[in-house]
Image (cartoon, rainbow, N blue to C red; front, side, top):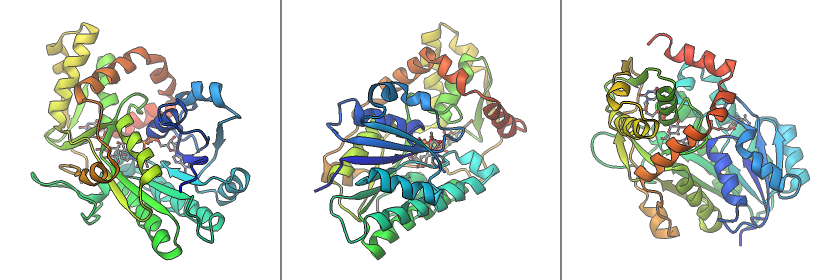
Length: 358
Ligand code: NAD
Ligand code: DAU
């Protein structure tokens, strides 16, 4: 029987992690325990993502701890103080383009940080505990790139092709090795591209929405025909919660939207929605689509076969893509303060470095 009394969430101030903590504490999940959020607040972490949670539950059911998962003394101290029975490990450097321009942080967090967390869990949960669980949140990108047919299954061999996905793959292998070698209760999930509110506007969907709102060019890499499988962040997090409750230690679960889109076709849809909501001309926005040079090693297509989690845990997607996109555009329209706050000097420098030459 899983404990699920004290959950240590890493990276809970980021896009998916903050949504997960909201889901845990807002009553929909049925969770009644407390959450410890360990986040280094890198450029992608934003405490404003959890301001209402802090106000409602801070110091009672919600505890924020600023720090790195790679800081062994800090992580050890958190295990001592809070005695978590569950770790949900979201913290990562997550942007592929950044990993191409500067891979070191990706190895430090996604590989060494994961190792440090696993070591702490091994030390504090030694002797075998069937109420404990370490859940490693991973990505479909570790499987590599698909041709025109087929989909990744849990049996597809890992074949990462960017420093980001190679680091995630290394973290995944370490997590599973701790299960096999030390008996650490570990589950792992590989999810496809998430979208929804509070995604940092370096990723495709929020970047395009924000650029449209600011009248900027819409940079499409290569021929625009790369394919991603999109899932709403809330559908992803309901799946993670199910794995925590009913997933089997030592098992991995694919999570996906079963919703493949060519980038250019998705952008056209986003343009239509944004034009309608802002009253701007669709043709005028389309003229700002700009072909830029391709991402090096750009994976062509991802698609997830999520039959296992549907069959074994009874999960399914609930948010239709059109409705989810509408809600996401509405959120960015209504939360321009949030965007402006994070458009810090560092963020502007990144846009300059990544897009300056193309
Ligand atoms: P994000 O970049 O929005 O958030 C990452 C969070 O981790 C930030 O709050 C950041 O401050 C924190 N962080 C980074 N380094 C840290 C460190 N050393 N110690 C503590 N905290 C640190 O990322 P996201 O999109 O929310 O992704 C979360 C997880 O989900 C990642 O593990 C990612 O690989 C995985 N994932 C993401 C997607 C996606 O489409 N975004 C899809 C599948 C899986
Ligand atoms: O598949 C899951 C992964 O999805 C996660 O593991 C990653 O953390 C997450 O960042 C995401 O990776 P992608 O590289 O697929 O997402 P991104 O939003 O960066 O890009 C989506 C597609 O859009 C990809 O084919 C590249 C393209 N793109 C992206 C940007 C930022 C553009 O054409 N122009 C752009 O400016």
